[in-house]
Image 1 (cartoon, rainbow, N blue to C red):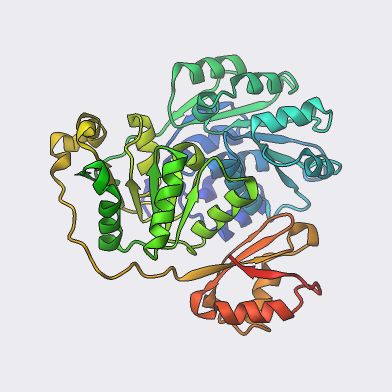
Image 2: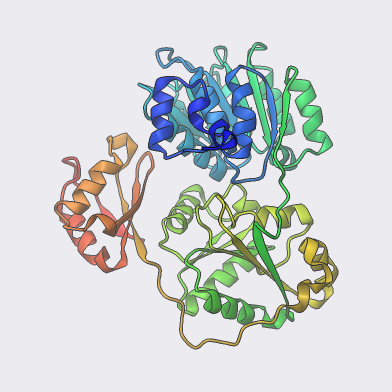
Length: 461
């Protein structure tokens, strides 16, 4: 093993034993560049300002840092992570829970707006050690005297540039007034605008600055641009989908009305497509993201705002149905493919009046960007997704675990192990992906069986 590889192994870190177990169970072998650069100072107690693109592994870096100094016996909020969106907060919570699994009695709570305050107040009767949330809801709970933060050790601002872009600066500064001065503050951002630098100067003490290049290269993601008239865009989209037959595609639209319309048109063509936009309530958003992440839907049609914080593993293809408003937004879109060392592919539809913007977004390709030719139409429809999603009306509040659902499906339902996909458990409901060929049998069996001695309603989404 080379010296460089040895220096990037997790086992060189001074992690407590349960976290070493969690890292091994998560199959984390080699640190990403942002982890290798930021984890040693984080573990040493330094404030850190880290720059890295989405999907770089920064969540695991700050999660391991805050969990390493946690006292599980102390029933108080010891770490607070502020996220710009509910989706990102949920994603971060899941990562922290996964790494905290080997620590005894550690409670991680997600607190975001868009839902009633009552269940959050109920959950806070037994304080968690880690809170992940959006600034508006966190401040609301602080002002209701329901979220005491006097024992806080670690504050994390995740995607700080987005927190500020989305207008959360006042809420963040109001929250800071309720935190102990002697804390560790970690700030992660994809970009370093002046507003982020000012915030860092105001809230951090002698932070170590860690920068990992956020520039996407031709080696990371292949980009192709197609010039089309407005009335040809949907036909062009279908041609691209049929040519690539990707199992997981994100299609970006500029407006929510367009996202709805494109998803509706795709479904009429037999494509299993979902729309993600600002008109959905929290439960609808959860279900859309669950179904897309577990490969029960082929295409997710989304607006930029709705898709912030979206982290889908192994996203095969990104298609810009509408061009992004600026180069930074374009990079955030296409950066959702080509992760974890995989080659990504991003395709953009460009109307004639958008040519100059496309050339700017193309980077090294420059003016040759628009030379791509659309593929010929294919008569055959896209293949159906490998999985379908079943919803179970029971969740964490019923003490339901993934193993209980897996056991019911492979036991009484008789499904093979590879017939069960991703399982997501929420407070009052759960979702499981099952192989399409086994979906009817699974639904019949779960409809009559008991899970953990509970009779729970099951339906197919």
